[in-house]
Image 1 (cartoon, rainbow, N blue to C red):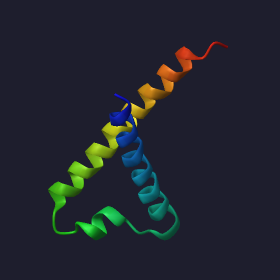
Image 2: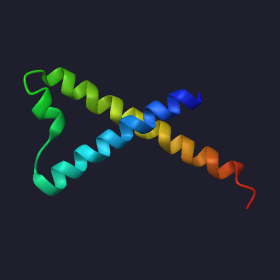
Image 3: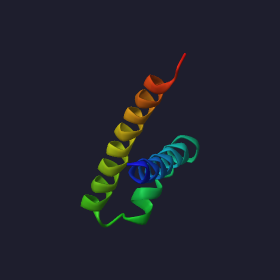
Length: 68
């Protein structure tokens, strides 16, 4: 399970960087790379979103194990 969480963390970081590019420079890297493949862009966004949900679960699991 740890490997899946690390992979999801990488996808979440890529998504965060993409949103940073959109916010600062109005440049969407995903659509720039895959401009002709709208379905692929949607799949990438869906994967990043699912990975974000996995990371949320990781956060709550970590909080439950904390002895404080």
